[in-house]
Length: 361
Length: 195
Image (cartoon, rainbow over all chains, first blue to last red; front, side, top):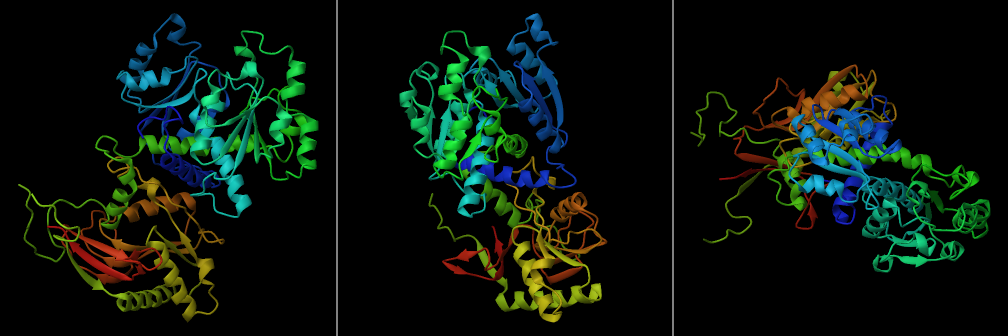
């Protein structure tokens, strides 16, 4: 992996590897000294063209726990507000020798442009682009779901897939990059994905996605999902009349106290409620639901740091220049490990007074 | 040009068979007890992957001598991946789990256990990793094979077998807990010569 741009092109093998590494990173978060030297001397730039609290802080914490240097670049107060282009900004970062750029941008595809343009040599991590993707959010959701699923099955999390799990995603799918990233990733990991939302807030072409679509939340809940992911109603992107009133939206599509009680009466004791945050309490999720023991909202935030540590570690460690095949990585590393480090290059023996038998000039 | 068969060209010889490994571990277990004057405060930390089963075997042998020892309570695993100095030069490695015994390592006598001691760089990484986890009273090193070619001022306290090797050769340790060869679990140390 050179960049992390979307979950659509992430293979099951790479996704599982990232989640397994995140599992070890989570263990570091439990220690007294929550720091690893793996990325010492590397520079990670947080380039945020859109507002964000948890994603930026989470990336910053992740980079710092790996001992990387972090430069936060908020667009307000930068030269971008004077009209600097993405290209010039990127080249400025390149001149400051950034090793990784974490970018959030209102335009879909901006991270892919940055990665493919050749403006910059750094690894690019998509932290949300327009209405396209938000891969690290999907990965932390998958991580949270996997821990839950593994605990239910009595298995260790590492190596477990989401096979057999039913995940319902509810709400404003049209504007949600979180929903898109989750649909691809959770399907890759073997889960069955259900979408529910008003037709006006479902994108054109949703029929071709690998999931079932419901136009009634209660009908979707009757499918007995193992997890319900509520999406934030993105008021800042509501440029048309998508639904008559927020009150009606809340009634029909919100996870309110009534639906919380319904889970109990249906006997769905192990169904969790997820939300990527920030929550509109009382709109798409009621306070009782958000604070119930079923809610994984805070676990998601905590897992976000572990998953982002794993992503930064996998992107920034290792020699990617002569990497031919991802499949061989582990075996190569293992083989080198067995031989215990790279041979010194000449054929000297350890017995005293040896003559050099090396073939090197 | 003909493509050589997978095995041709590599000369293999077994330097330690199952019984030799077992004898070496028995001796190391006694050495550890002697150096420590008993089993007090003893913690065995294996370095993945093959150091961990070796640490477990040593703990079993120590428990066989000293009945007050519960082997599971003195054994742990110490992953050093994130502390290596060659992370940028090799393909990305996935870290493995670090598991400390419930008593922790503060003020303990920690014996690091690994299969092969070569450049010493893995042990340097292990010492750094230990410092982030706690402050042992003493740290010692036990290895099954010391093949020489040290690149750092590090030596082992307990060695199963000193093997003079060429750096062209590769020392492979196969342990039944991890390695299946041809469908059967094998305990052996082999030297492969790559021409």
